[in-house]
Image 1 (cartoon, helix red, strand yellow):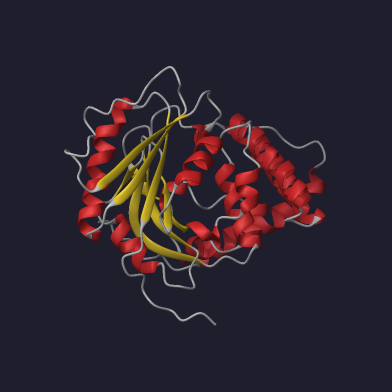
Image 2 (image 1 turned 135 degrees about the vertical axis):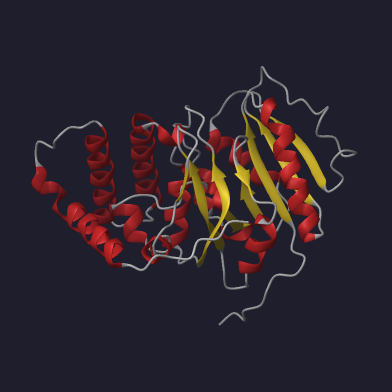
Length: 304
């Protein structure tokens, strides 16, 4: 059994896929510098430019302005999608831990300090609660009940219900715990490469530490890929294909995941299934999940 102890001065790499996002870089650099100050350590910041026709403007994110950010721009020759960009960033990452954060995301100034404390030697990934911004500017937390925290560690939830982690930006990941299969199968469709990563990690018995602290904000932009049901269906079906090729899931688990994606797409489109009986196992799990959530105690949500 691995001894549990807090990580001391482990290095961190932050990977940001960039797509015509110069307007976000200054504010993101501000928050990363604040995080670096609070952990008293430099951060490797890898900006992966996935828009060849739009260079990253480095004028406002120089080393002089942000002395604790070891910033490097990786220029991709053509647009390959967000998963490909994350993989290319990961190939250049040197940190013990990795944070995948999108250009328009926000994290608390204490994100890395709090999350790194969760990364004891037996932990592969730390997941925080998140504020989800709505179209009207209001916010609500991703995790409200204890069952929400438990669901993050439950493979069956990812397969039969939903992806309980709203964004990779909620997560600090041990770099050595990222499965090779995730790097070898870059997805063609954006939207669900994170679902693929979580399933692959859970299949390898990865240990997930979860905190109710809201340290991440998922901003509403009106064009978030994760808010596009059609995009998610296409991308999620690609996840099924990749998992089938890797042999990570059983044939029954693969079928359940495929049915779960189909059911979610039908509900999103306001349609009824032609053959509802085939969804019985999926619906039973979802109903059980809703009941557990109903009777579960609320968690104490804090925000830094």
